Length: 130
Ligand code: FES
View 1 (cartoon, protein in one colour):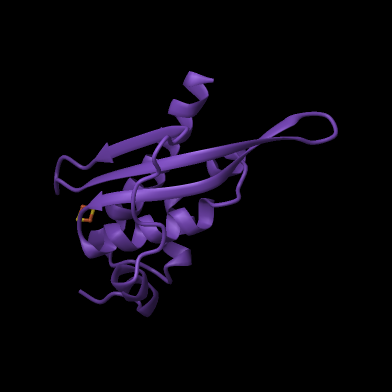
View 2 (cartoon, protein in one colour):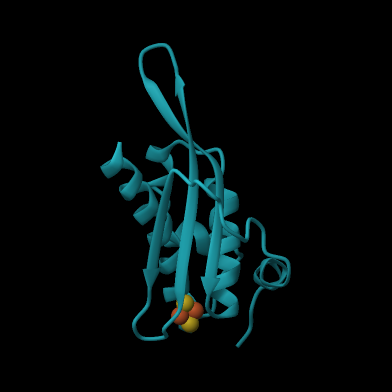
């Protein structure tokens, strides 16, 4: 299986790995087929703009029990989502993630879904609580 240099870089040196204590929201997803599990923690900042209140991802961390692609996906998704509004982050797709990683092998496409799903799960949980 051939991984891009970018996947290998994020796998060997993942960004934003760990836990946020007192996170504003958490989201966890698992893939029943491969058994991989991904959890994301969000710290949200609310900021008033001229006519409405925006909510930003101020900090984001992940814990992933999974394959090399799942680790690389977690790392890049957290990099991409940091600083985004919740609305923008909800628009992220697996194709955005795959593009940002300069591609993923066909057998590893589902790993990119896990990253996007964990992020969206955390955002949904935040919206449900607030
Ligand atoms: Fe399932 Fe990577 S093999 S998330």
